[in-house]
Length: 282
Image (tube, rainbow, N blue to C red):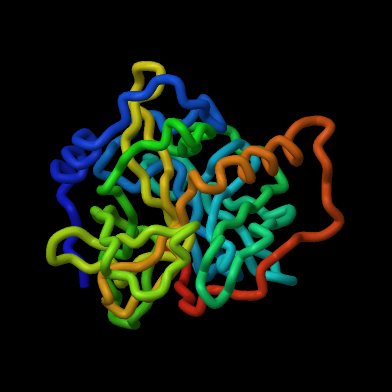
């Protein structure tokens, strides 16, 4: 199992590494705002089917969730839970239906290369303090040079060996270029838990984020996507390089959002699904 970061350590790691660029374009300017940094971010999305969580993702616009391609299911009703973390007792989390799903055309189920997908929600999300999008940088020339990230993982195993949604916590991830035997070097990078901790209890589709200075404001940007849920405590895995696909993300959002947006007749979904199933704990 892994050891969790304390809130102070999390905050320190977020502030140490950041880009000094102020010229990068963002997918959504109302993104990555400050929040209580000892908690899982307000952009966190939990994908569940019949109340069982099978993957994670991030809210990136009012209508789209970014996740891994292997998290996209065919011929099933998938709901996306938003606002689960950082809210007070009188505030409510939201379950959104998925209108349609898209995965990158060249996704490989064998190598997890190009493992990136988008979910279009049926209803636009109303942003709140505890429900906001993560930033996606749309300029490859302003790619932050980051070797350490903040990821998420399950805090502990219950007596029945299942995980509850409220037990998701923060973990520090760092690049480990020599620790992955088989990854797609063009679309992935190798990373794992820092120190003696192990990220063997992560969640496929969950983000790697870091601090970035944009227009003189600290913003949290997403730089990676977890491709595996069960790492067998190997300590490292391939993460999808989000900025490699910034143009695809931008094109999809531009095509499907807005009054004149195109609406497909069916989803373009992956056949692969996550193998670990978790119950929803509300």
